[in-house]
Image: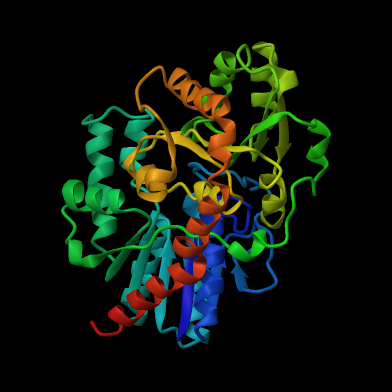
Length: 388
């Protein structure tokens, strides 16, 4: 099959959503399918997948996630680019990412009579409500919920990244459960092979216990909760160090730790290439996932597991689905920074016994979370849609 994958985002930008798109495209190609990823003008080209981009927009340079009014015309250009591709090639299937990708995909599906799959990693309206950006059950919430419900009605099949998200689509949006397939995030196990502790310059930190966060730096992903939790941890454990990997707004959060007087306990790397991430993780001691969203995907956890790191995360349904009994959970109750600090202190106090599970965590990642395992599930959805 020849598959058009729609990515309305500056792909590839070394962050969670993009990692899923990239790894899905690679694993699908292993089954003999041809993938064309259609995306914005911005982003890093990758050697092992075919990428088609919209025309260059020199004044738009936003790589970070989040809403932008510019996306209205960017998505129009993306639609036009996809139409051009569909006229040039015989496309058998459209695999759309993000909600605007589903809208673009539906237009193309109707015009060219090609089946559409929507790959979603979270509910927009519920994430906005959870983050208190909009008021739950307010006018804006109700309007956006109707729009989102409309989007979910468009594709022939929906892929969700968690069972909890599937349940939200069924319960809150009235989507037929037979239309939904749960396909969680995966991890590229091969990237972690033959890596040894001390193989990265962070070894200058010596015997400090390194707590690593890898992800987008914004309030939604919990970076502020993590920084505030350090206020409780540092007085108890002076040999702790926080390694913060990601972007944007690095200067903002560096200023935040300076205001708290704890800048000597933090290292901010900024944006690093996805390919380099494993080398950082294997030099850490504890992986932390401070996101409190109950619906959004949490792919960083899988990378922590593949590196053999004990994982501290909030006790959300999504995190429990991934980690099961292997996670160390912070209570999802305010003040969140104190709950997170208590869980991290527990790990630090019992570090030797926690680290003993390193091999088990790596095996869990390999046996349950590899992209080879995930690819089989994607292949099943492709086969199902061609029987409709």
